[in-house]
Image (cartoon, rainbow, N blue to C red; front, side, top):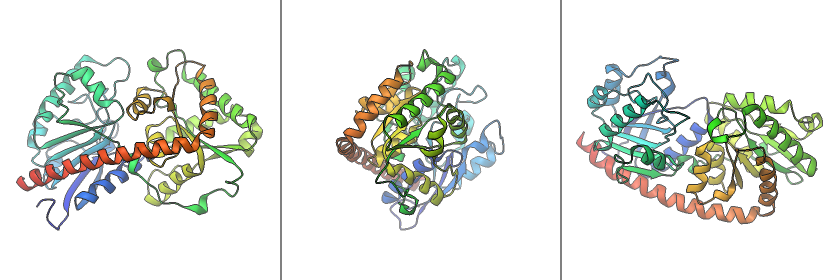
Length: 393
């Protein structure tokens, strides 16, 4: 069977599907672009079931049999190349041994993967991941792509002698192409009289080495000060807090305790957190559309809003966000959390963003045209590769 046949190819998709709404947005954008080029039927398999702390499934011969019953295995997208797991054969959550890889007969698409190093990295994990790259980069049955968040540059810095940019392709994260259905009934009644500021913040992505002079408690206090200042300076402003995962709910609770009581009662809304279900997650993302500007700390809070032409300010708690904006040519739209002075910079950038909203939207529109062109080239290459590899399986 191959992609030019009228029948759909059967795809096993191993990734994270629950717990973080950014994963949902990413996969929906990927399915949209993929099926525009190749008729396909996806079966989702939750990666977290293989994690050591759950161990519900194993990377064993039974799983090999499952993979080989499909026409294609898709890994990711996501941050599954993060290098921090000592128990793993690769140093990552993709715990594939050399023997396991050799037994895979089905073509494997590594889709828009993320690679990060958090603090000091164990040399043993560096070596294990190097061995993994050696096995897959020159294997024609593997198609490898990484997302546009600085991943390729970080990999080149660590494994430059291995990285062939013709074999490791940098592509747009699929979240840029996620366009949730509009649920206008969920728009708040006074949207035309209120300037809504979206804020996605989390302590999960606060990186000590990246943020230098700040610890997480001080950061939470400064964010609370920022919100108080935003709401005090302009009576028409209100804030929507956007959780993308359960960790964000805890962060929101900490921050709310430091916000003036009259503001948290009258001027703050918390968007719903749904961790599964297409309609409820789309409804939650639709709240972004009423925002005049979104300040985002999580990757997909930024990616999805840029994709919807909503003015954003990246709040860089670690390298991923600043690298994303650099790669988009939008570095001026990002604020690094590296000192207590970031609040003044954030306030200034918010004011200018609201004043220049139409200009920013036009700029984002051009960025999205370029991203779509890159995605079309990516999916054309996937189609050519699938037609060749799946046919020869």
